[in-house]
Image (tube, rainbow, N blue to C red):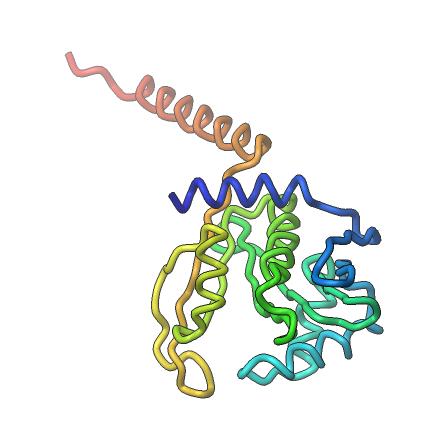
Length: 212
């Protein structure tokens, strides 16, 4: 079930992908919500304000810059007119020989929750990770944050482990993981690797001395 959900999310995310400078719109209530990727340092105060007001874990400006300078394409913001109402911050890097995505922060203004904005932001970031050929996505969520856990479960995430007293407030966290389906290029590469390994095994077997 989780793999099917992950495949559906990946396919849906890819279909909804946008270029870096293009905004997408969707109706929400009486107004129109727009989404766009992080642009530059001018967006940094917006991101920091949204997250600092909503998350229990404090972050320094250096933490924000660590993510936003290296992976600006994995940060999306949601606006109601000119008002910033949601943001996701993520990264992707090598983990034990394969690419892994990581969702570091996802926040929606309290007055806009329940409208699907968190899901939309998550799918946009996951779409970028799919294009970047990530094989999995991970994150941490407080065990008491039922809203976040429900959201991520609907996206295909599964509980990987429980982290005791993970946060500064001594709250436990769940490590959640989403396994992404391989792209066509990755499947071709994997098939070639297996063929090469099989050829090496056959050569090694042929070079073994024959016992009379």
